[in-house]
Length: 399
Image 1 (cartoon, helix red, strand yellow):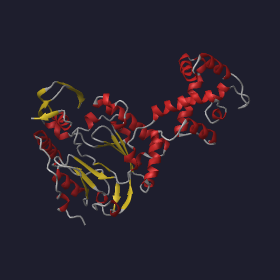
Image 2: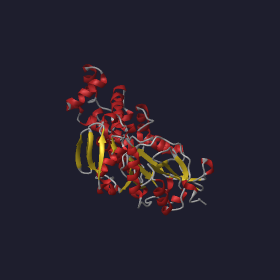
Image 3: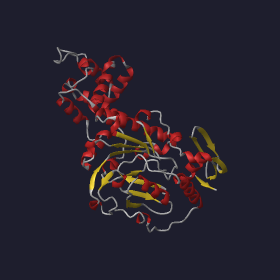
Image 4: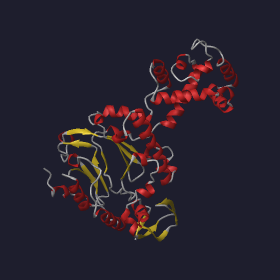
């Protein structure tokens, strides 16, 4: 049985206190003053962890129910708060093997850490790009390729730079880390080469799906008007190395094969299915390699693999505030995901009730809460949500 008093008793190393952080903590306290836990099932079987405003990570806590969770949050005013994706018999045990692991949700974390060029993007651009990857994860990989239903998925804006997707279907709870890694690798497009693709395609006797179908469709599209498309021939020139080799290759595409009643090679290459992979030569494989690399770059989904494979992972608490943005961790309905705008819909409502005085260290531009802001350095008054965002992200001081 959890002692409702002891869950709040922690010794913390004292860190320098910043006046702006004190003001920010007070604003978080206001947000959490009427806060109640929501959108977490079986909370009594989850580990709770949090980072206070002036201290380091505290783990291995538990609560009995959502009412206790609300009391816990109001008492501690966390800068960040998390709960385990796993269910335990004894969630407050400090040694993992003594917690009594019962199973875990399958989790996907998508943020800017793995995006190419993220360091050159604005916050809004990062959110837009991560959203594209999340859409592919939900609709292409999880629902189309892996066959999960909409009811099997819970989607949250992380409050920071991306999204969390939880799979809560019965079949995933007992999956090992290795099985989860296989899914992560599939979604990231890892673990297959051009040789693997061709061999796998030749061995396929059923209808293509998933990555195979995407690659096959792209090859058919490439060859469909190759003979009359100068742009594609320019790509082909680059792949084959010189004009003569390319011209010979184009001529060879008009030769007959023994496939489908002596179809021309170009006809076989544009037909969906496995036949094309059985007649490929070394030049065809150069095209195949180009398609594989291109498709993987365009269609892979950049997820944080360690999050997916970790069966003891902590994830952000729904409806809590992100300590580096002041934005809320909000659930998103699948059919509303396309239109979701985190810079409007993840703003904590109470912060809209006042303005804040800040001191900005350098110029900052952002479209925030349906308004465009182009701020200059120095002291100024801004809407409450923007002031919280700038102070939490260390772009400004609250004064």
